[in-house]
Amino acid sequence: MNFPLFNYDLFSNSEFYLFFYGVVFLDLPRYGFSIIINALFVRYVAPVNENFMPKVTVVVASHNGAGSITQAIQSIINQSRPIHEIIVVDDCSSDETAEIIQSAYKQKLIKIALFHSRRCGKSASVNHAARFATGDFILNIDDDTVLNYDAVEKIVSVFLDENTVIASGALTIRNSEVSLVTSLQTIEYQLSIVGGRSFLDLFGAMPCCSGAFSMYRRKFFSDAGGLNTGPGEDLEITLRARHFGYDVHFVENARASILAPETFLKLLVQRLRWDRDELNIRMNQFKEFNVFKRMNRRGEYFHMLDFLVFTMLPTILFLPYLIYIYFKLSADALSFLIDLYMYVTPFYLFLIGINIFSSGSRLSIFDLIVTPIFPFYQGVLMKIFRLCAYVTEIIFRGSTRDDYVPNRIRQALYEAPGCEK
Image (cartoon, rainbow, N blue to C red; front, side, top):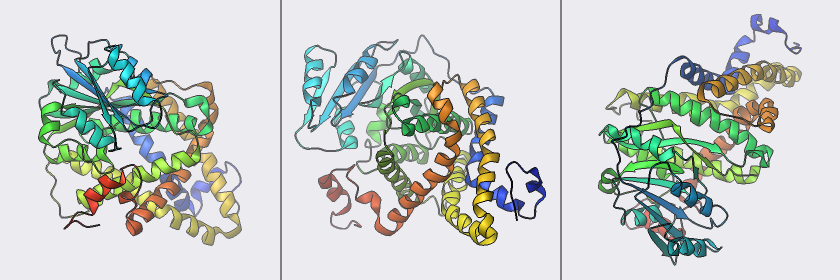
């Protein structure tokens, strides 16, 4: 069997189903559906109401953020609407973060500065700061998050709806041109966050409000007990809010930039943590795989199916698919996979173009040069990372062991009497 490059007879070949499944596993349908629907339909964006001027408290928790926290604080100060107060926590940093925060406090750039003598983790730090918040809303950003000048004005507008308790803005990569890894993440964020979350928000199925840029109604945040001090706190509180019957939203035109991991090793560590946490939270905490569990709204079914159909199943079946290809096609397996990739890449480029046009996003020249590599990055490499995360989570409970949560906090969570280790 021979699969020469761009041989369209492949579509009538008896092995066409192999091509079809390959397209699915390379994530083309997932992005295709969301991006095309986003382009065809006008996405709802809550209008800015000049009379809606709630008090916003901004909370920044930092651990060794000396290289970025000054820029983050400045972006808060430069907002188009005045911020009620800024609270910054130094979570036992070993660099100059504490000195920078102290200096900002003395200059009255921030209202409250908190300093931890022992590391507590991001969630506990944010919860600590929230105790002192007096605003109607709490905006939580990371110490490397830089807000667009109108980001707060845009994101707070969705809270005119009293049932909305959490909203998240769009994130872009600020260090895109540093390396191939950051450039690939730039394209990924454009598709999965700007494109994918806009699509899910259309159906009331926003699954996760990113901890790097999310706003909470303070009363809900307080009544719910704040962030879970375990891993995956942003996904957990989003699903918790949905479970209670509240609305959560994605605000596409509220934008901020972050710093992405610059090497594949750092990216691997980050994604292993993210995917382990997600599997643990969905499977163990919220029992989403229980087919007999009743959902209170259609959006709950939609975001659960989105995870199962477009994330979990393709990841689990990807390796068996490759093994089957090898035994089915033997020496022609590699040729088939190359042809498959060459077929898929132009469609990916087309979808990236539509997403840029419809969302008003931008890519650098370097990002555009990198785009032909993106199908491999998203469809192969990320699936390998995610599969490793699933295996380590199911067998070793990896989400309860990484160092994102300090050991003493972890012991309190998982080793208290009566709790499962």
